[in-house]
Length: 361
Image (cartoon, rainbow, N blue to C red; front, side, top):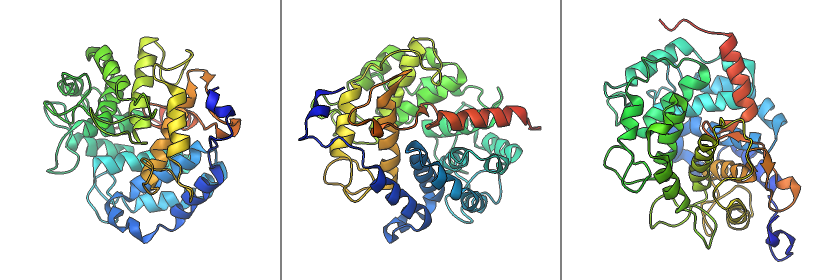
């Protein structure tokens, strides 16, 4: 336990009730300031539902199930992918968010609502000859596309050698001289892109083909030794969301080094300072009105609430040993770091899709 945990001058309590109210309010009626995210509606659903799942709010997740399924079906009217809003074209990022939202519900009806043959056809249309994926018709390609395609294909059991031919080789070209991964070959190393690249390579069983030691060193250097939080790039300020992007990245590498799968955690601790990261998130990233934030002085939003909480649970649970800063009530539900879904949600999805294979031809 961090020595600060016993200091009454430090507020180390996770304000659960405030965050739950903030999330449930957003699930049913978003503030008008979110109008600009009309093209990211599946993301909002995923961020909120996943956050509630991390907080153990199973009842709230269950009560929203039917409405979320119907809502997402209106975003998947054609082509097999999910668009950002009603009648918007499919996009790999919102497809990933939509599938993750459905899996997070832990409902058979939600899993049955996914049209896997059409989803597979959509992913194949986004696939490029060099192994990369464009994010939408005539769109850009970067490591996000490969990860989003890999994550939804593997979680729904429609991954095939044909779908990801050359993808690992293309990703490896995106690793930079710093050790992290850029969006495309030759771009600056970035925490979000590095996570996407390593997570996809891990799903492919090809993570050992990149320079894992250089990647680990780069990621560890992004934890601020004073603040405890992570930055996303060299010489940048810390940001609460990178507690997941960098923290999960390190957790995956740790799991690979110990020859354990990310959801079978048998070591004792990650290689970053878990207590310092929890201190940063609990002391600096909680909005007193509910929700979590980037850094002090910012307002809460659902994106940072999701990834701050995801980073917090990564920092708490290294393999089978918990390291909880503050009261035990701070403990969150564990996640699978490759998907950023709860371990139970991944287990149920794997079981359902394995028992219900589909014809992809």
